[in-house]
Length: 259
Ligand code: PXP
Image (cartoon, rainbow, N blue to C red; front, top):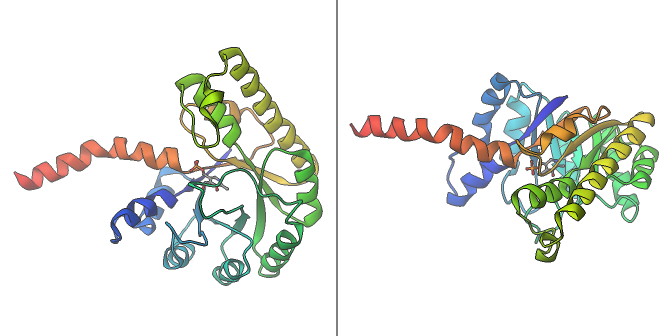
C-alpha cells in the first residue's frame, strides 16, 4: 500500500504568521528520505494554505509524484493543466468548511466533472475523483473516464473517534456522541463494509483505488486490510505527530544557542 503525504498543514502553520516559515517546499526532501510515495497538496479556491507559488515550486522540485487536489472550477483547472502534476484529484469545496466534508457529488455536478476530466486528460494528467463509498458514484466515475477514485474515509474515522476516544467533530452532532457503544460499533462495522464493498466494486471496473481523510495512527489498521485500496493519502495526523516527535529536538537546539 502506497502513502501520499498531504502537506497542506505545513502551509496552514505558515499562514498563521503570514511569513515564509515553515516552507512546505522544504518538506519534499524529508518526505522522500522517509519513504513516502507521493506528495499531496490542495490548491483551494480561497488559497487558505497552499498558494499558487507553492504549487508551482512543489510540482517543479518534487522527486516524488505530485497529487494535486482541486475543485472543478474552470480557473483552477486551467492552473492545474499548466502545472502538469502527476495526478489531479477532484474534490468538493465549500468556503465555510474547515476541511473537505464528504465526497464529490458527481451525479449532480456531472457536467462540470466531465469537463474537468476531459481538460486534464488533454494535458496528460491522470484524474482521481474523491467520492463517498457509494456504488452508483463509482459506476459514474468509471463512465466519466476517471483513472482513480479516492474513497472518503471521514465517516469511518469519525465513528472510530467517537467509539474509542469519545471525540466528535463537526460532521457529527453531540447527540451521536451519546449513542450507546454497541450502536457505534455497528456503525463502525457498516462504514468499513461500505469502504470494502466500494473498493472491490471500483477495482472490478478497472479503477485504481485510493482512500483518505481523517486517517491516523490508531484507525489506519483496519483500512490496510482492504486489498483493493492501493494508496492512502494522509495529512493532518502526520503533521500533528511531527510536532511532538520534533519538539524535543527543537527546544534543545534553542537551549544550546542560548547557552
Ligand atoms: N484526501 C483528500 C482528497 C483530502 O481532501 C484530504 C484532506 O485535505 C486528505 C486526503 C487528507 O486528509 P487528512 O488531512 O484528514 O489526513
